[in-house]
Image (cartoon, protein in one colour):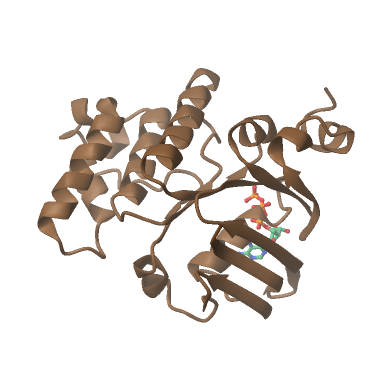
Length: 239
Ligand code: ATP
């Protein structure tokens, strides 16, 4: 197994807010790993640290053995890391097609881009139906599929998903969950999933880290964690 990503004792501050208090995590190529925890626990900060959007104060982030911290955000994308941001940042006045193509901004292989676009549209037929429509007219669930599709357009090795189920109708959450499983299987992409919906996250991931106020408090195989009493009490609503 090849280690893809690691955090060694990473600390991150926003001015005086101590958001990551010495976080160490590791994930192997091909895994789906979930980060669970309450609002403000530091999950998004981990993703921001990976993508270079928030500089770390100390520690080390490695991707495929290479130091990632300190690298520019576009260079990080070029390394093969794509992010699906929280809140479905779509370009509302652009068409679905143009939103998707934005995801390929680091690529110049026209034939390759066309073939990735084809596979995204096959995976999400709703996007094909709404291809020429402006993104602002899509439902929340469709927008979420579109931003996942947009990230796939970069042909990432590591896909970061920030709260894909947030604000999505409950019956669509299952569709999103199934899509994530299918993407990791078919595209051989490694997935780091940030979710407040811990049940969903644990049900589709191989391993998980549970976070609280800037620290990892528990980690393990997701199928064990979902039965763990401490996880049940703190992250699964006690049932
Ligand atoms: P959420 O689900 O709300 O995204 P989270 O677990 O992802 O929660 P983070 O967004 O990583 O948590 O936030 C960690 C801490 O850092 C919180 O206390 C938050 O209020 C604080 N924080 C996040 N972004 C900023 C910022 N830009 N400026 C100041 N404090 C911030």
